[in-house]
Length: 334
DNA sequence: TAATTATGACGAC
DNA sequence: TCGTCCTAATTAC
Image 1 (cartoon, rainbow, N blue to C red):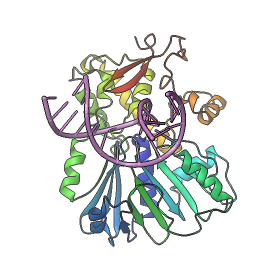
Image 2 (image 1 turned 180 degrees about the vertical axis):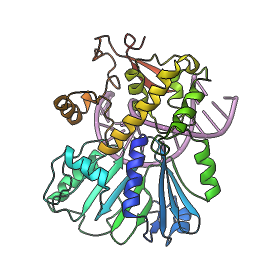
Image 3 (image 1 turned 135 degrees about the horizontal axis):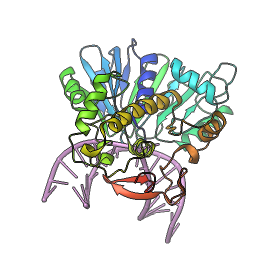
Image 4 (image 1 turned 90 degrees about the vertical axis):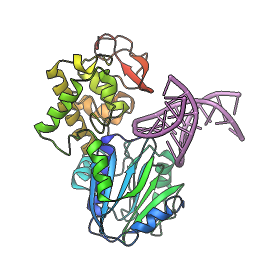
């Protein structure tokens, strides 16, 4: 269940491993057979992430748009070249073998390599415990002996080069577009801090929020206001700003809106580097490491309903907002 | 075996 | 506000 950071990470994988290569496209599941045929045999020339959407550009002005939705995921197999940023982050966080590849698998971006290092496999998207277990058994010599591997589960589209295989499963959107259609979709999306890191985006976000009567807790999830924030980052950003989720956008002090934008930029960068939605970055180094290692201790309020607030001890509240679960501290975020 | 859950988003009322 | 779609793991029965 990826938010913006995962999509940026996946896009980097495509930049590193696919851009410049001729791609064989297919749809093992069959549901994307027509689209795959349009892409098949073309050279990939671009990979872009905007919020939670990814656009892969192919020669001949053909684009593939993918949105993972709640449980979509990409699985990479083969001789994967890790993006420098991702590789170094992994090296920092987990155990590494002699080749420097990553052995431990911190969810939600499960990055798993067999110890031989040859037949690597990585999955970015929804947590896939089965897949992890499989990888562990593969370490002991089963499976992944052939390339490309047998598709696992419902694979909507498979993109293949000589050395890399990428399988897409469970996307909410997977379609072939022309450049004008891509432009139309991107134009509707709100700013993404990694796309335009300058003051223009901050200005755009701030002015939109400051005009709306909509609760800030809904605005942060609105992809047309700001792209890439999902349910986890929403709850955490609001807590970090000590902001009541029900506050109408127009009533949030301007400086606080700007702080929200800058904080989102910061958390997104951390997420892209580490592959985890760490939102308690202000900890001392030791506590930070412990928090990273634990699934439960990584957030201020997300999934902590009924537990004491880490700051004031008040029980964290769970309520529905925008048909999604919203966690917040009624005392800190009064 | 069925219900439940998940870090989305859309369209019909 | 609801139903619907995409998938797979976990939990309940």
